[in-house]
Amino acid sequence: MLGHIDAIEMAFPPDVHTLETVAQEVGLSRLDTRMFDRFYGLRRFHGGNGTLDELLTPVITQLQASRPQAFAAISHVAHCHTVPDVRAFDQRALTPNWLQRFAPQVEFASLTMGHCATPLTAAEWLLKQLSPEGYGLLLIGEKAFHPRVKLIRDTTLMGEAACAVLLSRQGDGPAILSRHTGQDGRFSIQKGYDERETTEFGEHYIDFTRRHLLAALDKANLTLGQIDWIAPHNVNLSSWHRLAQLLDFPREKIFLDNIPHYGHCFGADPFINLHFLMRQQRVRPGDKVMLVSVGLGATYASLIVEIPTARHTQSRPATSGNPST
Image (tube, rainbow, N blue to C red; front, side):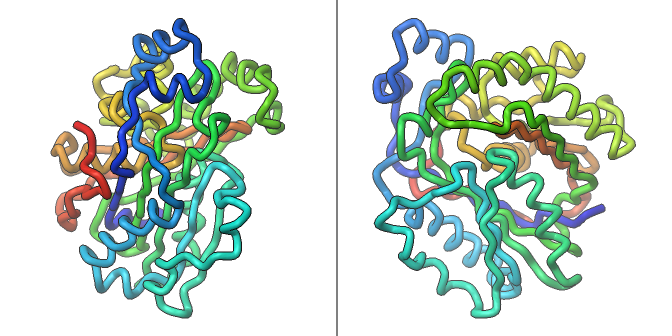
């Protein structure tokens, strides 16, 4: 066992945009828009004109209010993001207002090399930095500030969310049993303007994800039949339906409910989906949940967690705007 997920807080910008609005912004054709709706299941996205700090501050406030003693004991904070440069040029030198919430001795890191898969890999790294009594914070979130950031061609559309994941080595939340990361360097160069880059990766994505998901199970000495739920990244419905078929895994045990409401929220998706599974009491003590994400590059990452028999009561996933349901 690597450690525990002691709390998950999440927040969404208050503005909600329809698929039609976002499709026009990123230049999708009418045919592509219908495909993103009918086959990919992408329909609504949270976003807005606020800054990155305005996106992240609510989850820090929520965590400080819900777990004040643990918050005071945080020794390390890792901001995980997909886009390497998350701030506009004129904001790079600004100190985030939320920084003063943490003790002066807290260590901070910025992690991005796995792109959307970064937080799942970062969890084990962060846990290794902690003392037995200490806490670490994964801070996940970024702005979909440009059409080329919002759209992964023929694959998904990005929404905005912030997520704060409190980790400890000796906690009472879901136990992290295993972590697996795998990569394929053929897709490591992403210029951002060459359509062939994402198209070529898209042709290999299903098999890449399937192979590494099975490798993650082998590493954990588990079979797919021992997994009760998959909490995936919200890339689209059709790819997960195809993976369920290839893996012979029940489609209804892959938590896809949030795709129509939030889109693909970069690296936050698996933790948001785990939080919803727990909030809706769809997991039972002893259930094993596999958190899965894939980042361009390409990087696969997953965590396998076990729901405890007795866990800390997590706060309701309050948002800066009410979550779409």
